[in-house]
Length: 263
Image (cartoon, rainbow, N blue to C red; front, side):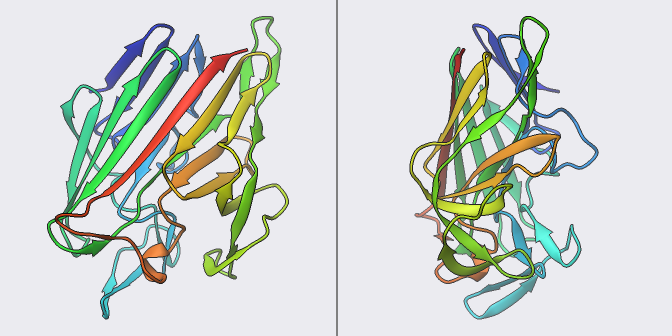
């Protein structure tokens, strides 16, 4: 059963049975998110946990022990374990999920969403009673085109100024080195943004994405949509030096806010 949040001129719709996904965001009659696709990772806006992006060879090494996880793309495990599972409704705008197998440790993720007539804010909380490495984030797909009141179609513009980029190896995973940002089109993870990224549909709407997360993936290579993804760490971070370790007294928290104004 879909869950809806309403504010003047706006509606946000979530599907607890489909990864707790934000399936729709309507603002002034415009749908801002890519609608349902066959691939669960290519539409709406969904939470990533307990890792983000690709986990090399679907393998995790933590405190000297190796753990093999199922692959969901050739030779890798992508985007964590919460996107293709059912979540529970735990309150108004609150969804939660408990996960163990195939993860070595039991954990809980809770997302809280709040909608106004000019913004939607999200808070993520990942908790575990057992020490475990973790990263979280969001993966929204924003539509490329909107129809203006006079009927003509406008194309989205992405305004973003990253200061640094994670250099990728031949597998498309970070080497651990930060380098100068590449030219567009982008399918990279960045750091040190000079300002929050802005999505603009000229003459219709401008949307700013802000987050407590340190890392951002920008993906603008496809015609279907554009992704602006705040992550708490880069891809494969659980196998890099000093991953974030969740404990019973040290949860992983993250926030993201989309703020819009009509043009």
